[in-house]
Structure formats: C-alpha cells, structure tokens
Length: 198
Image 1 (cartoon, rainbow, N blue to C red):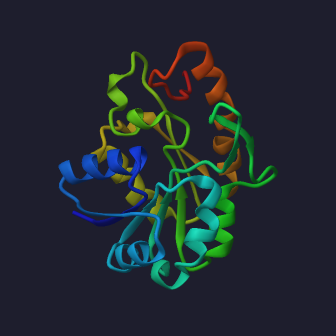
Image 2 (image 1 turned 180 degrees about the horizontal axis):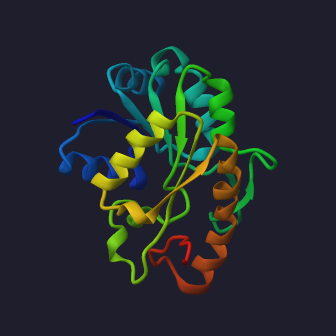
C-alpha cells in the first residue's frame, strides 16, 4: 500500500484515483489550487501529475519543497489546443514536459508513463482488442520499479510495459500525442493506445 497524491481531479485524475483506491492504495485527490496540491503532496510517497500539461510546469515547480524526495509520475502531455479543443502542437519541441519537470525539481524523481493512450485505457488495458504498451522514462531505477508496480496494480501485464531509459526518452512518447487528434477525428473518441507489436 502506498500513500498516493493525485494532482488534478478531472477525467484522468479521477479515473486513476478510483482505480488505485480499488487496488488498495491510500489515495488523496487534489484540485489545481496550490494549497490543496501542497497538502496532498506533502504527505504522499508518490505524486501523480494529472493536471493539464500546458500549466503543469509552473504549477509543480511551485511545489518544489513538498515534492522533495518524492516520486512524481507524470502522465500529462504539454500541448497547445487546436480550434476544436484537441491537441495541436507540442509546447516543448526538442524537449518534453517530463524533462522540464525534472530540471525544475532536481530533488524529485520524475517518471513519465501512461501518456500514449486515451485515459480509459490507463486503468483498463485489457479491454482493448490488442495488448497496449505502457512506456516508462526516468533517471531513477527504483522510482521506475515503484511505478512499474503501480501499473501492475492497474492491470498492466509485465510484457506490456517497456522501460525506454532516461528522462530524455519522454520526448518520443510525448510526441505521440500528435497522433491523437487525427485518430479521434478519423474514428471518434474510442479508447486506443500505442502498442509495440513484436
């Protein structure tokens, strides 16, 4: 059992919080206000960033003291929005939100994952017709192992989880968000995820 703080109480955060609670973890959900997020982060071992990616860096950098020594699981993508509200362009081309967070929070262990799928798949990967892939990016092996265990609790099989390496590899997974608006416009808002076929 882990003490987990989920920052962001929208569809992504609410979905993750409910699933992790069902898996036996002690979960606190905080909205985007600084006070609520600081209180939740202060007492947690693992903090999940489920806030909108465009404001995540500023929001989490303000929590540097509360996030010191914690594992920060970043599931967000930082993009501009197109006229239809779907992702348009990356906010950090040549970098990634995860890298920006790690630089701003040097005493926090950032792990990027679950950002290459629509949110229902995060907690129900087995509902897809083909096995999806969850990617891990981060500098700290022990932090990635802890996140790997959380993914297992969410229904991810070991063979569906791929450790890509250091935090710079998040550039690749974050760039995958550029597929999303085209897939949604083509097929509708039907759950899907990137998958590595082997």
